[in-house]
Image 1 (cartoon, rainbow, N blue to C red):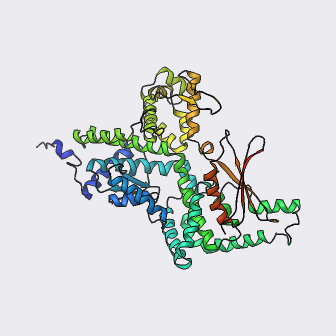
Image 2 (tube, helix red, strand yellow):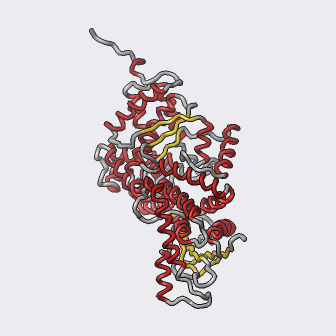
Length: 512
C-alpha cells in the first residue's frame, strides 16, 4: 500500500504560535543542513527564551549574562525601554554569546518563523564563526567565559559589601572609561578564564611582590636624578611602552588596593573578550545572514516551510540587509549586514558563474563550483579589513554604487578620489578596508614613562595619525578617570609620529 504524505505533514510548523517541541524540530532540521550541506561546525547550542524586558536588560549590560551591577546599565535600560515603549525602536530578534556551549537568547514574542530564522542565524551562523575564526580562537576563552562572569559578578558584589557601593562604583566608572585602552592589540596567549578565580589570590601575592620591587627603586630624595641604567631597569620592570593602559594600572598604580586591581583585571578581561567582535562585525553578521538565508531557503525547497512563511522570512531578511543611500536620513554608514551578506553572495556568484573580470581578479576560486570551502576559509582566516581587501569585487562595487570622497579640511571642495576603473577599484577597496581597521580608527595611545624619582607623574603619548588630534574635552575627561586610578598627575602628549614633535599636551591632576 502506498503511503501518501500531504504537504502539510512535511511542514516543520504551521501558524505563528510555537512550543518547545516545535523549536526542537526546527533546530534539528537546521542542524542537518548546516552540517551536511554547508559543512559548518559549531559549539553545542543552548537556546534560552526570554521576554522583551529581559532583552532590554541584556542590551543594557552589553549582552552578557551574569554581569555585575553598574549604574550605567540601568541608565541604558531606561533609554532603550522608553524608545521601545513609544514605538521608536524595535528589539533585536536575538542575542548570541560567544561561549561553549553557545548561548542564544530568543524573544518569546517572536513568531515561529522568526524563531526559525534566529536559530539558523545565531545557533549555526554566529556559532560557527565564533568557533572557527582565528581571532576568536586566539583571543577568547569560550569555555571559560560563563564561569568567569559568575566569578566577576560575585567578586564585585563582595567588594560592595566589604568596601561600600560608592567606592566600587568609582573604580568601575574609571575602568569603564578606559575600556577601549584596556586591550592587548598584538598576539598573546588566550586568557584561561577557567582558572581566574582559582589564581586570584596567587596572582595578587605575586603582583604585590613585583610592586614592592618596583617602588623600592625610588631614590630617597626626589631631586636626585636616576642613573641611565636605573632608568632602563625601571622601564623594563614597568614593561614600557605599554599600549594596554588598564593592564599598566593594574600592575603598577602605586595606591590601588588589591581588590581595586582585581576589578581592573575583570574589566580588562571583558574588554579583551569583545575586542575580536569589533574587528569582525561585518564578517560575523554576513556569515550568520548568509547561513540563515541558505538554510531556510533549503527548508523551503524541501517543503518543510510553507510559501507564506518563506515570504515572512524574506520580509525580515530584506529589512535586516537594507542599506540606506548616502542621502537618506537613515544613513549612518555601511550596514554590516548588508555589506557582509552582499559579499558572501558575490563570492557564491564568482564560484558558480564567474565573468572574465572575476577570473582575472580571483583566479584562485573563480568558477570552482562550490562556494562553501571558499567561504569557510574566509570566515576562519580573515577579519573585516583583510576580508574586504581579499574578496571585494569590482562587480559588487558597481552594484552597491560605491565611491570614495576625500574630505580635506584644508581644501574648499570635496574630491572624488576613486572612479570605476581598475585603478579606482583598488583604491576604493583599500579606502573601505581602512575604515574597518582598528589600527586606523582607534587612537594610538601608550604609557611611555613614569617620573618615579620626582613627582610620580604618569606620561602618555598619542601618536597622531593623519593630523587627527583628540577631542580636547573628551580627552581631559578620560584623563581625569586615569588620574583617579594613578593617584598622581597625568600628562598626555600628542606627537607627530614621523618627527616626534609635540603637537599638543593635556595635563590633569587627580581629584582631591
